[in-house]
Image 1 (cartoon, rainbow, N blue to C red):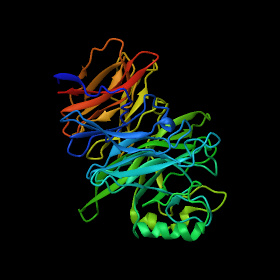
Image 2 (cartoon, helix red, strand yellow):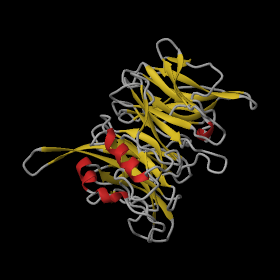
Image 3 (tube, rainbow, N blue to C red):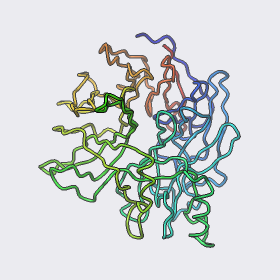
Length: 431
C-alpha cells in the first residue's frame, strides 16, 4: 500500500466539515459538508454545501433563513448510497436564547439534489395524543442503511429524561406524506405549528431499551449510542439462506462491581414489526417505547469494554465482523474486531501509539483508516500492514478520514489558519 498524492481540495474562508460517514455521492463525484469550523457549533452553522470533485466548485444546497447564535443550526450531512439525496441535522425553527439548539431540539432534514426541495424526515409531535411514527425530541448522527431504505439515528427526548440517549430508525412513511400531515393538523387543531412540531415524511421508532440506572451485572443499559448497520446471512433448517438487516450499537452497562462498561449490542430491524405496534409512540410523561417484537441482545461480555473515545462502530460487508476501538494496558486506543456470531472480541493491533479518531472501513472491508499522532494512517485487515499516509508538521486534523466509494482515495478535514481565524478545509489522499 502506498499513497500517491495528497491534495488540498477547498480554500474558501468558511468551514467545510465532513461527517463521519457517507460524505461522497454514490457516483463519487461530489462531497457534502457543513459550514462548521468547530464540531461543537452546529447551532451556529447556517448552511450545507457541496464540493464538485471534478471542477473544485463549491455550492450551497441548503441555507437557514433566520440563522442566529442560538439556532436553528444545521450540520452532519451525508449522502444516500443510492440516490441524489442528502440528510443532515436541522435545529428547531423556533430557537431562541432561552430555548437554543440542543440535543433534544433537532431533527433530520432531507434535500433532493434533483430539484433542490427540502423536507423534514422524522416527525416531532409534542402534543398528546401523539401521532404514530413521531418523536418528541431530537435525532442526530443519521446513517443510511446499505441500500438507502432506512435511516438510523441517536435520540434524546425533550420532555422526559432528556439526558438518556437511545438509538432509533426511520423509513419513508408507509401511507405517504399526507398521512402524517393529516394526523398533525387534526391533533394540533390550530396550535402553532412552529412551536416545536414538525410533520415529517418518515416513520420513526426507538429500537433500544435504556434505563436510568442499570442493575449491576445485567444486560440493562443506561445509554445506547454510535451505531452502525449490519447485514448478515444465516442458514435456515431447509438449507435456504436468510438475509437480515440490523443495527449494532454501543451500550453503557454496569458490571458486577457497578463500574460503567461499554459493550456491543444488536437489534434486528423489520419494518412490518415496527409498524404493527403504533402504540409504541407512547403517552404523556413517558418516552417513546420500543415496538413490541423488537428485541435487543448483548453481543459482547468483555472485561474492560470498548474505548470511551467517541467513535462509531463499523461492520464488514458480509456481516461477520464488527470493528471498534479498545484501550490496551497502557491506555492506547487499538483496533478491535468482534465476531458477530460468537461475540468474541479481540485486539487486532498493538501499536505503540494511540488511535485518536473515529475509524472507517474501505468499501471492500479490507482496510481501516484513522488518525494518530496528527497523521493519517490506513491498516490492512488481512495483511496487518500499517501505512502512514501523511507527514504533516503543525497541522490540526479534525473529524475522521472517509473512504471514497471506489476505495482509491480518502478525504479528511484539516483546520488551517491562525488562532484568531482558522477554517476547516478538505484534503484528499489518492492511492
